[in-house]
Amino acid sequence: MTNVAIIGTQWGDEGKGKVVDLLSDRAELIVRFQGGNNAGHTLVVGDQTFALHTVPSGVLRPGKISVIASGVVVDPEDLLLEIRALNERGARISPATLKISDKAHMILPYHRLLDSAREKDSAGQLLGTTGRGIGPTYEDKAARIGLRLGDLRSEEVLRARLTLALREKNCLFQNLYGVPTLKVEDLLKRAQPWRSELVPYLTDTADLIQKAQAAGRHILFEGAQGVQLDLDHGTYPYVTSSNPTTGAVAVGTGLAPRELENVLGLVKAYTSRVGEGPFPTELGDETGEFIRQRGQEFGTTTGRPRRCGWLDAVVVRSAVRLCGVERLAVTKLDVLSGLKELKIACHYELDGQLLDQVPADFRDLARCRPVYETVPGFSEDIQRARKLADLPAAAQTYLRLVEKLVGRPTALVSVGPERSETIVSHEYF
Ligand code: GDP
Ligand code: IMO
Ligand code: MG
Image (cartoon, rainbow, N blue to C red):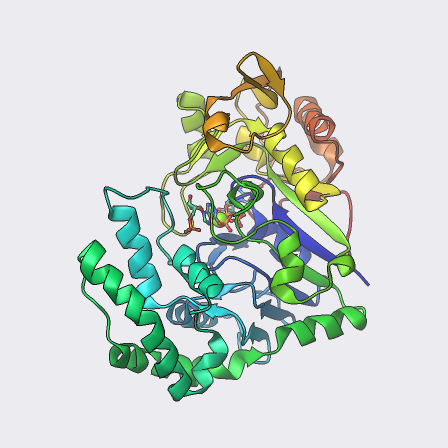
């Protein structure tokens, strides 16, 4: 029996979806534990591409149970659209195969509205969010005025909770942001199809996961976002509003912390970031553009061009410590083919001092200058490599340097977007 958490060690988009889809072959339960439809996880199966947002990335494998646990925030309208679109393409998502926590909080239309109003407010703070209402939903959860999916079971409860929530929201919309206010009755009408279609999926997912663990089933915990977007440990305030770090597996699912067995850290062979915030190894030159084009670094959720730069071992090391990562999955190595030399930041320099940790204050991080180790690049197409020995010597040297600088061995190397384009050196299940 075993379980594995898949954690993004950078700023998200490390290829978590691809790796979860791959490993879900042998897992029985695939569980999302935090975040919401701000996530965009792309899976490539044969000549078909699927972009998943709330639904776990094991959903394309028949016979698996997908779980959206209580730590996730769910946009009911968006989730129903996602399920419908996937089923039209041959997935068989039903209440028998997808289990959703009745404790998960709902992203409601006013959360999205507030998210976008704040982003447009010239006197406010531009974060470059995905505009999905993630921050406002987690705020309401913490403020204890949120609505949970289980509230869909009763129209009376829905009415009372919406009335309470809208008192403050409408005040903000009317007086601060100058956008139209919302009416409880309109929202109740909009919620009718959510009630009839989503309630059959709701269950006590903590109980389900605890029993699966006790019965020795293989469980995969699918992280969303990445460690530097963590609300506590990331580049605050340029972060998301959940915890993509390992601790959230326990909080967001109800699995006891000591029962989590393995943590696989996803490391993209370079770095990307979407939205605002400091990024020490960012490349504003033609190398950055080369990586963006070859890596197709355009957001799965918003289509925004992703900022690109060299791999940052300081960032990945911090993820190793924060998350208990014991092995690495290095992804998108193929994208680096064609570059004369490759660089990895091993330290930062700040005010004449050498740092080997990410400073707590984003203003300090923005002033850090990366100190690089440089190795020769490779030019071969490596997408057909299926074992480490198939890789050119320079690509192997690069991987060894990653392992040395991060201090953890590699379990898997991804050399292309398709499921099969992977070198597996450690099996979990
Ligand atoms: P996630 O959010 O961590 O799941 O990552 P995304 O799906 O947002 O972004 C990763 C992108 O890279 C997707 O388009 C994947 O299909 C693609 N991808 C994943 N692994 C590889 C790889 O090894 N090589 C290449 N070229 N593309 C990959
Ligand atoms: P996956 O799971 C990359 C970023 C946004 C923004 C910040 C806050 O695909 O790796 P939010 O909408 O969460 O309030 O936005 O976080 N962000 C992501 N960046 N990948 C993601 O998810 C992200 N989810 C949120 O761009 O900078
Ligand atoms: Mg993504």
